[in-house]
Length: 259
Image (cartoon, rainbow, N blue to C red; front, side, top):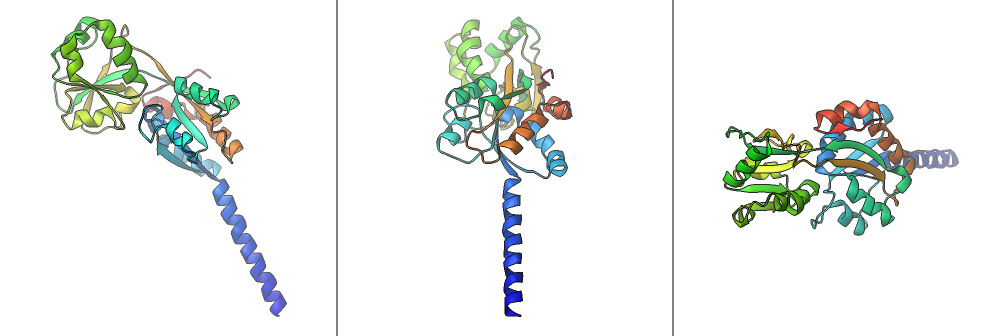
């Protein structure tokens, strides 16, 4: 009897360990930039139910000095299986060997939009002349520390020659959605990727900036080189890059890439 009980206990313990291992193997940690966060959050419930894989999605900017940024998280050795981020920043991780080059997929195109506090007048920005007038007349301007903000501050604003008074009132916002700053009234107008502005409460999106000033940002994904769940991580990326995820990507404010 004692031997039978011992065998039974051993079997229960073995089954418990196997279940724990299976659960662990079915959990993927995803580091997601704000620009594609809406898409992965929309996809997650359906994907988890269909494939039995739990997705732990963490906010992580594609670049910048904040500790939460994808490159900084990976440099510290934080666990991650998949990264979703700006394509140009992802290329740097590929070169550094931090993500698997062969796993890289392009997911959506993003464009820069302008927002004002909810209920505030929406100025016309359809032409470059209107856009320039709004920039000069606004009391304060906010932009992100990621791809769109770097482009605005380093390329577009200098090219437009807006003057020192404009530069004094234009500020880069680190580690926080630009829309949140606008919603609090700390900036009269704010610029960020449309997909990053859409989820923010307390703002109204005026629209995309003019085509002559616009810059497309490509969002992509890849499997982290040190991931212990490479096959499951690749399967998630393949799903995101398929027509099954197109609606979620489009609804989030991105333009799905051609398949």
